[in-house]
Length: 304
Image (cartoon, rainbow, N blue to C red; front, top):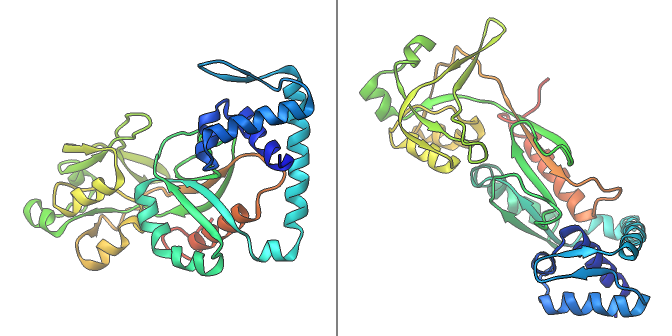
């Protein structure tokens, strides 16, 4: 039995309360996870976990052992990270959760650069775009637009998305181009509905130091960013997206920025990860890379 591997599997089972989730996150057969825990219990001579058909819970002895394992594994990670070769050549798998729109507009076009720098890191993208439990879902970090809600996580702000109002040339030719918020209110939108809250977002503008909100009628409301943008490009209504998500369509002429005399409040872009004394070298490398990626994007650059 590899005791370090067994301790890592044990700590993950304690944190996830599930053998199945740990087997999926570590790409191990569930039977191996179960056998490893059993072998560890035989080695230390006490029961570490209570098992039932519905759940797994840690015993009193297991909780004490868990705290020791966490400290030991952190020291091992710290020792490995201190080696120059490890710092310069991080390897392994990282699991990143984000939205499909953000992945398409920001991450995917630049991933070749990441792999050139870190050829031994395997990035696995999850596109849940919802509140998740990093430990139970086996995720290393989350990239989110908006003010972070997960207060138990470290939230590193990496960008401030510039918000624009835009519509397709076909829509503007058919319905005209609004030049004031009063005129805008008479138009129709493709409305965006939060998949997490079910709330429809109004259009927002900074007017005389206050936030003016304009709610538009629509014949279409969606909860997916790619569909939201695609519907506008097809002429179904006006949208108010983050500019970096539509920059290519604007450059191609598929969408046109309107109401450019008005400024909309920006939206934070953050990386969220669990509180840990030591981040793995591969996760640290990814966070630094995506931070630099946002810093170099004129539609995401933090200016305040």
